Image: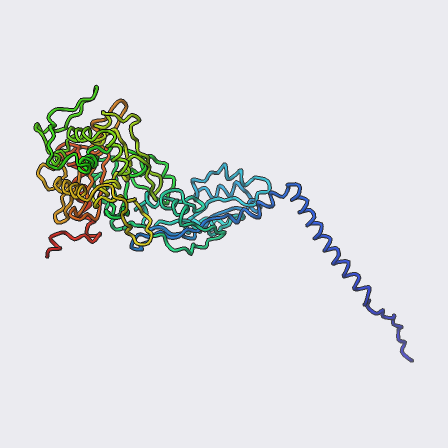
Amino acid sequence: MSAVVPARSPVKPAATGPRRSGRGLLVLGAIAFAFLAVSGQLVRLALTGQGDTVSIALNEPIGRSFARPDIVDRNGRLLATDLQVPSLYADPALLLDADEAIEKLRPLLPDLDEAALGRAFREPGRRFVWVRRGMTPDLAQRVHNLGIPGLAFRKELRRAYPLGRIAGHVLGSTNVDNKGLTGVERTIDDTAGIEAVLGADRSQRAPVRLTLDIGVQHGLEEELKAAITRYGARGAAGLILEARSGAIVASASLPDIDPARPAEWLDDTRADKLTAGAFELGSIFKMATIAMALDSGQAKLDSVYDVREPLTVGRFTIKDLHPAGRPLSVTEIFLHSSNVGAGMLALEAGTDQQRAFLARLGLTGPLVSETGPVASPLVPARWDKAETITISYGHGIALAPLQFATAVTALVNGGFAVKPTVIARGNVSGGASERVVSAATSTRIRELMRLNVTHAQGTGRRADVPGYEVGGKTGTAEMPARGGYKESAVISSFLAAFPTSAPRYVVLVLLFEPQGSAETRNQITAGLNAAPATGRVIARVAPLLDVLPVAAVKQ
């Protein structure tokens, strides 16, 4: 038998050529049409104002921050710098449960505004919400470990102050976007400049160098803290200036401030007492009155004035706290801190000359400072005989302590006006400029300051530091109250220069509302608290300033 082979169906060849090419074109056309439709819809939304949510969602995560230059002291020691820190944000569209997310965050972020965050999470179309900016790495890791979908981090720049509160008032602070708010930080924004950044790129600008010496700054702050404890004061302030240039070597106000906590600037008790307020400074102002008398030629150091009787102007009577009971020379008026004597010198000069002299010293107009606004002088609207007398011994005119210390610097440096500066430009020490008193007047003032510390009757003898030729003047000013002054509440101060033979530094120390103690014989006058506190400041910082005691130089 022969095998029967079934017939095979004919095999059709696969389609090729034009038919296959046409099908591909159809697919590509469909894709292109879909893209055009989406693009057209986006354009329509943009033109009708319905694309705002999309725009915000795209732009908001790329928040702008600012890169700042470092801040260093005169010796190059770091005071402020930018650090990269994690900031937490949320994409509400990716949150599985907004309430649960907030509940999980609560233990780690107890100060979170939960109500505001909940509203932001539920806002229609919202794709970006800041949760916490500027977190520590440890806190960021703990948040990350919660594993909440929709939360993420991005790096930002945040200002850091490695020395904590030291020089806080001078340095100032920045906001959440790293822009300067106060102090030198604000001045940097206005002068040196900062850079807008989209990420966490540090500034490449050269560091801003200050005239501060951070070692001297620390010594000043520590001695002021000790003085507050020792004399029961409510606050204190201190300033060290270069006599020739006005460069600020140290500046402190207590209670102090943390530059990393901008909210502390809202606490009035922490305001910078050297610049933020104007105070009647009391008898340290007699330095200006006596300088006026000497510079005009109306009096000499040995000129004698009969101070036995009080001065009377209308219903006001001006007398001395400890009357000498005899006529006093100009030198003795300074040593005894005689209010009557100062008033007589001012009356002899006249009101017009007094106003002109104080204006020449820069005490009646505004002062500009790189650390921020300085309180304007409070001068009497009516400047007559009574005001002429009271101003002569530091009442009736209120000044920021920085402004008065700057004026006195001119009285001791040979007679040249200076401008207080804290940002070094070129050399740390600048140069003095306009002459405001004669060299002879400056010499006489230095002699009086030194005598006030070395003489047995001098009010500043407790400020003496062997070997350093300290000279200075005390001031005890009653603080104003409704209808008059509070006798038991004073600002005690001591304004010093050293070494007085050729002053290099001017030092001002103020104690606010010191209390009497056994050490001060229950008194609150400056000779018993501010003067010795100043002596301790000088003894501590003079070696840091390369000022050697006279005995050491002679060896």
